[in-house]
Length: 361
Image 1 (cartoon, rainbow, N blue to C red):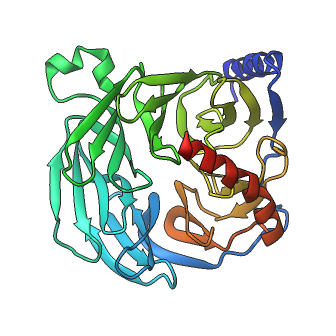
Image 2: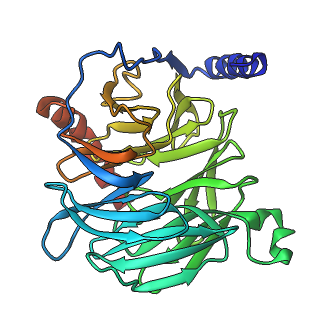
């Protein structure tokens, strides 16, 4: 760490403590000196696993895993790791998402993205669309009726002169592949965007060091969350909509109160390239060679379950059984639910009540 980086970290630490934010610094992990941890359930070999997504197929109720590398998308049966199909390309594939019927992924060509849609198990494209922006991530809404993209750049020189249109959150209709909403307000490229648990709002993180919450229908920015000193790489909202977590380039995770915008917890020395909240309220973060699971990140930030992949983790996902999937370079690593049944039940009970209240609001 350079002297300037150290100075910024000390400044951030002082600001967070002054704001009554709980600060915790994780012990730096080493592969040769790890605490006891759950063993992986299975390792699925892939041509590359820079990103992964999981969904339940409507036709047969079976779960599938999609992994995207630089030049191929692989679809696997989640139960036994059998490959359903492979979709090769000669260009960089940046992100992938699954619905019960389709796999959608983004292929970048210079400063433009192409969005491909394939029916599960098919190797001929169902739809191919040239986007007006350069997309960095894609996720489905909980009901699979919409998609949200994190974007930068624009198609025309006139749009390039408009800085707001370089950095957008773009919402599409998943059935028609038509843009529905453009959320503008970030002053830097948007790194990641995702839907809230009830599907009514969208969350985004950006290189402008902020996290923003938007309404899906109008594109209005409801709140901006501050506190990071470096570009924010990923973000997620808890199932009860009370918490927003985000991870920055300088290995700092912040957890904010959704309504007030106050930073509740700051966790230092954790690289988070991907994160999500599970339905039981536990926070999962993937980065470096580790996946960390916090059963109660606000109440007990020091108590994280460590899962080791031995390879750099680019993305994490979760399944119906609460099993965890990590995309680790050339393989997908799957663990059973690392929380005990008692812990999971105790954690999930109040969150399920909160999620029901948030859905009814």
